[in-house]
Length: 473
Image 1: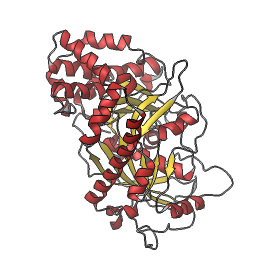
Image 2: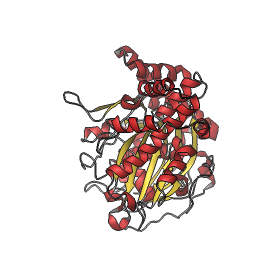
Image 3: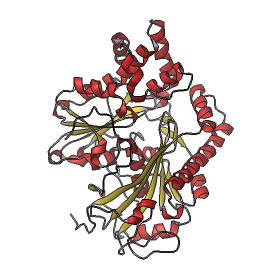
C-alpha cells in the first residue's frame, strides 16, 4: 500500500464551516491541495428516502494523498431537513395514484431540484458554511419508480427526480445525480447502492459483519472478514419493507399528524397478530425471491400498506396492535432473509444497524432475541452516525463520479462490470478548478484503482444518540 501522508485526525479550526486549510487560500473560498496530485474535496451529500420523511444532508471532507493510499473522510456537519408540504403532498399523491401526466412529471422534476437547492441554502445558513467552499454536491434525488426486476416485455429502468442542472444553477455548485440509472446502464439493478460505504466502514480482519439498513425499504450488506475476501467478496440485496408500512399506518391513524412511530411507542403498546405476519411473509413474492433483488415503493408502497392496515382492522386489531403487527413484519423478514438466502448466516459475528428503523427498539429487541449469537450494534461506532450513512454514501459516490473511478461491486450483482460513470454531472462555477484537481490525481495510463480502505479522521459527535438497546464492543 502507498504511504499515507495524512494524519489520523484532522480537527482544523477552519473545518467547522466547510472550508479547509491545506495550502494557500484562493479567492473563491477554496484552497489549493497540499501537493500536486493529491485529492482534497468538500462534498455535500443529499438523500431523500423512499418515505419522503426528510432530506439528509452530510457535509464531508475527503482527502487522499495518492490513488493507492487510503481515502480519508471527516464528516463536518450533518442535519435532517423536513420535506416541505408544498412538494411532499402532491408527490405522495402522484405515487399512490400513478396517473401522472408528462406535464406534471416534468414540473415535479424541476420543483424537486429547487427543493434540494433550498435545502442546501438552509443547511449552509444553519452551519455558517459558504456555498463557494463546497466543491461538489451528490444528490440521490427522489425515487419515483424503480423497475429493477422487469417482467417480460418491460425495460429495466429507474426514475429519480430532482434536476441536477437546477441544483447547480441555483447554488453554483457542481452536482452529481441519477446514481441508480448509472448502475443500471452497466447491467445492474440500481440498488441498494450503498455497499461501497458499508464495506469500507465495516470490513474486519477476522469477523463476519452485516450492515443492516432500515429505511423505507430494508437492505443489507454482508461483509466477509478480510481473511475471506473482505470488501472484494461483499454481497447485498433489498430485504423488503422497512419503515414504509409502519409510517403509512402512523399517518393513517393520526390523519397525517404523526409521520412515524417515535421510539416504537405505538408498537410497544400493541400485541402482534402472528398469523397476519406469517401469512404476509409466506405469500409475498418479493420476500421469497432469491437475490440479487431490489425493490421500492412500486412493491411496498402506500397502497400495499393500506391493504395490511385494512386486514388488521377487519380482524379487530386496535391501532396499537396494527402498528405492532406491521413492525413485526419488518423485523421477522430481516431474520428470514439471513436464514433463507445466506447459507453461512451462523458465521455472522456482528450486525451494525442504520437508518430510521434502527431507532425502533421493537425491531432491535426482536433481532436480539432471534439472533442471540450475534452482537447487534449501531453504525455510530464507526464514527459515522447511522442516520447519516446514506447521505455520506452519495457524497462519496459523487467523488467517484468526477474522478471517473469505479466503486466496489458486490459479488452477487447481475454483472461485475466496473462503472466509471456513476452519475450525471451538472457543472457549477468551480468546474474547471475541480476538473484540474481530478485530472492531476493519478497518472494518465489507465483507470484509477478502486478505494478499498477508508479512514474516518474523527468521529462525528454532534448528532443525537441511538437508543440504549444496543450491544457494545
